[in-house]
Image 1 (cartoon, helix red, strand yellow):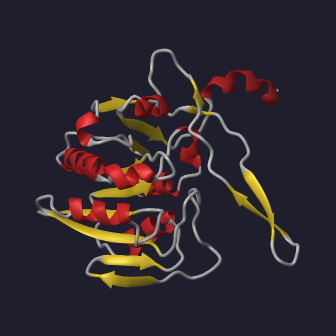
Image 2 (tube, rainbow, N blue to C red; image 1 turned 90 degrees about the vertical axis):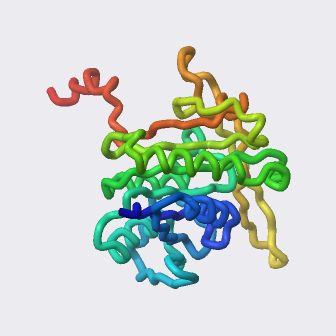
Length: 262
């Protein structure tokens, strides 16, 4: 029986990363691929659902849809409901143009689509291509390594060689290198990102102020001496695979907070 794979992203239905991923996954044996992606770029939209307006599927090609101004989470939520009688066997979100590491996972539309997938009890992973030099690395290395990794992980999940517990997904980041320079997979923790404020103020011809939010450099602190984080792994030419769980409870604080119950 053919396996059903649902693919989305947060860069929009025309993005090169998505097209390359779809072409690669469709070459796997015994799979059907359906694509539902946002009409426009939805980077950093987080795990948002659209509740204030209706959404519409627009068919671009066979089994390829854009969701008119929907978010990545909308794409997964509605595709599973509207396009399938039986849930798909796997959800892949990507290939994102740029990294999704450390606490950036909380902003990421790419990661959030995988979150929505596991909320629907469907095995899911998010995959991102880390870039350098203002995306110049993409012109050199492209998405070849990311496509190879996506196909490998997809096959392992579909063949049940890789099983993730419920409400947990894989967040994969690919270093900006050629395939031959990769050191292989490294299982990592989410890094401790160092954030600043990169907001830029401008004025339009009428003198009104407006702002652009910029891009932070990939800086981090060591969180653990024993476990390599995603940012460190990518810097050292490893393919970072981070298992992410949706349970956000801080269990370490529960005991001291019991004073509030008295």
